[in-house]
Length: 67
Image (tube, rainbow, N blue to C red; front, side, top):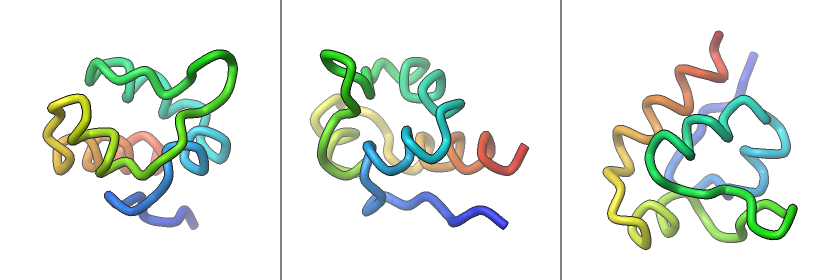
């Protein structure tokens, strides 16, 4: 069973554990990888920084890890 992704989950942990989520971040206009390394910080922090609706992003990320 997969852990639930939340706004407090770090981008780094999510991308490392679930590489398929990279496309979701990209679809929301967020680049989760910079210079070959995952972005540091929480999903909530990065969503705020990129003016992304964090609830929609988290819903899509959790959908991907359940597939």
